[in-house]
Structure formats: C-alpha cells, structure tokens
Image (tube, rainbow, N blue to C red):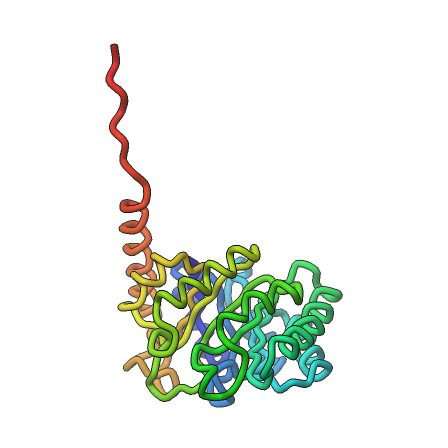
Length: 257
C-alpha cells in the first residue's frame, strides 16, 4: 500500500519532506475549498520544488461540476505545474455517463501533455448525501474513460469517515472492481490507524490521509507533523507484515531421503 499525504501549502510540504522516507506521494490540495479542493498552480510548483525529486506530486483539481471543458483545462494546469498524479473529484456528476465525459476530457488533456501522468477518477463514499455517482460505479467510469485509478474520499468533512458510509465489505468490492479493470484502488476519508487492518486485508493500493498525521487529528487547524507521518507508516508496515504472514503459508521443507 502506498501512503499519500496531503499538505495544504508549502510550509506543510516542507514538513512532509522531513518525513519523505515514510511516504510515497505528496498530494496538493486546498482543504478550505472542499474535500478535493484545488490549490493554486504556483503552490503546486513550489511544492514540487520543496519535496525530493523521487517523490511524485499529486494535485487535486477540485470537487468539480459537470463542465467537461472547464475541468479538462484545470487538469492540464495541474500537470503543467508539475503534478504527475491528477485527481478529479466528480462532485457534480449525477450519472456515470456524465462522469465518463468529464474524465475522458481530463485524460486527453493530461496525457496529450504528459503521457506518463497518472489520472485518478475520484468519487465519494457519502455520495448519497450530495447526489453524485454511486461509489461502486467509479471503477467502470475510470476504465471507460482511460483513467489509471479509482478513488473514494468523503465529500462532507463533518467527523464521519470512509467506513461510516461504505463499510469494509463494500470497499472490498470497490477494490475488486478496480483491480478487475486493471486499475489501482485508492481510499481516503478521515482514515485513521485503526482502519489500516481492514484497508490492508481488502488490497487497497493507495491510502490517502491528512487529519491522521496532523496535530490533534484536525485536518483544518492542525498541522502535519513528521513524527505522526512516521508513526502512521510504521503501523502500515506492521499490518502489511501481519497480512503477509497470514496469506503466505510457511510450508515445511520436504524430508530428505
């Protein structure tokens, strides 16, 4: 499982840089503009310069409306600014067809500029509260649009969490559908260390966090702390080891003679 951390600006990105050995992707967002709020192009550029060159930078393009041209331009702006993972929150898409139309525009805009960029179709575990695409439709949306990954987050940050809206067994189905479509599966939404056992068991490829590595667990007023990033990664690694020990049988050697 890859660990994606979301700083809200350059200062927090520098804190992430101090913990670079413990994370895999630095994700640029603007939390005060929503779950997948887009930050400024110059912030993406500054964060790209602030973190080690071997750490990919991800950028959200917002909790977007059903405006395919607008979203495609935003996505191109993110990749031009230095992001190689482009995440699109399909907030205003009420049907899979709308979501596919938006994502096809994004995929073309991004990959025409940088073919090796990684496009993520992001939906919401609490889709029922905002009227957008059903979470289990996201893997097919990503596959049909040519995206590289499907992701779930939570749209409304009111203290409820990923598993409050999409329980582990449904998240497992989301991951299965993504893998069946040869996509990566990413999960986020106020994820804590307590969720890592379930996330590991269901085969999650990328876990995204912010609040869990902020002081006081507060994604808005707390600041990312390197020691909390290290602790989160240590717990991830522990679950990975435990899962491997359970799933890979330790066959005894055959007797000689």
